[in-house]
Length: 356
Image (cartoon, rainbow, N blue to C red; front, side):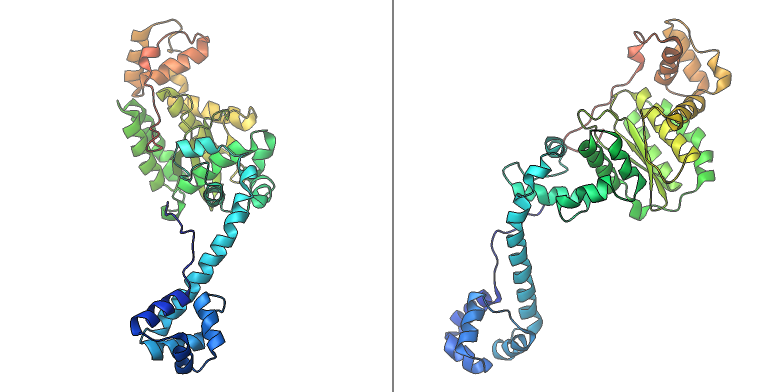
């Protein structure tokens, strides 16, 4: 992030520099501009604003275009406003501490150190798209957008809003084509086949591009400690946004969560947020969609009922999906989760890149 200066350069500073170069004093400049010496004194000190009329006069006197003098004035006033705002931003830091700041710094979503209170608040405001943290509740808790209202259902209001806001910022909606439901349905077999890729990270990159081709945004945002959500789905500006945390760190959980969220896209309302683990009917339907899409019903009676690694690999190869998915479905069926870990691929977030 660009470091902002802690000072403001007035047009008067540039005028003084020109006076020094030309060997002219302020009184002489006042005569040439046909203004009072007091006015020139206030221009030099930055107390008086530089008017368009005086800018034109300076153009004739100095040879420097009026547009440059006007630019100096605009930049000076903006810097003064920014400096005046610094104290106001710093005063919001106590409120900002309710947010997961350590998480935001760890994953480089903000770069300001803790000692820079104003800088921290400035970056946080940019994440949420608000001008003051007093607007947080109105926008992210009580706002009209349905998925923001979902934060009311949990005491993790700040963590949930942060995670969703980061997903919104990284969804790339401005470069996304129209959503095509039929094309998404037709794409499901190809997405399912990618689960068998020996590198899940490369596979998820391919999935991301394929989904963008049918108007679906997929983004992976690291999980926030204490906020136990694997995935979320909501609609923004007519586009489904699927967000994954890879919280479980295993490839089968990643794939199941992805297809669970795609179930929400295809089956449910465009006006609500769906957070995996909510325990309602929509979540149960999305679970069923993921299970039947990954392991169709006619294969279910062939899922291993005992600890048989060979049978898992054989069935996965026949179905063309990752062995870990077959393992996970078999374990769900038998409730025996204490075997087959060697079939799972562990995914690790890279804290230097905010990527898996």
